[in-house]
Image (cartoon, rainbow, N blue to C red; front, side):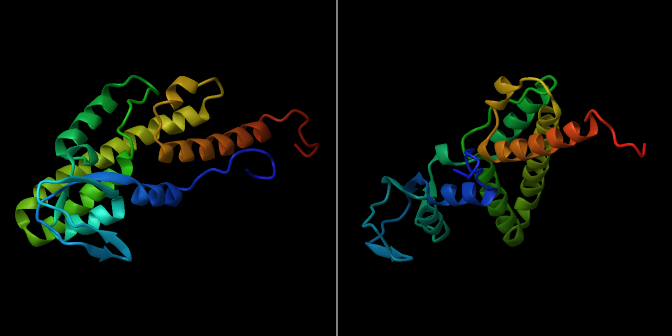
Length: 193
């Protein structure tokens, strides 16, 4: 709590840190004896096992070729298309709901495609499509969030569809816009006008 009694707003970095330390599901692709990853003991793990580990541990195992993320933990081109389509058909300031941890998963997916496309030209087209879809989703949602933040009326139903990252943006914009509106519309103008 801040000294004014309002909750401290998490930053995007705080949300990302929580994501990296959240427990995720992975599937083991190759058997692995007990190992240490940055001081954390992992294993032994057998091929085909579904295990839950911290995101950062999972990422290391995936990068090393020992595992892959469970389908529930990933975003792919088809899911990006579906989210982009749902977002564009929403009227006005309505936001569609997005999966939990959408933005970090989206960034991880695009980063993976960027790496693959640097090594294998056959991934360049897929990377470009994913990047365009991600930009469309972000731009569409951003326009709606700005509109919501500028609305003087109640928008509580629309706010339920915001991700944590979007809520940080909304709260910041709403505060700035409300303060600006208050100053602009303030009664008792100064005498030099």
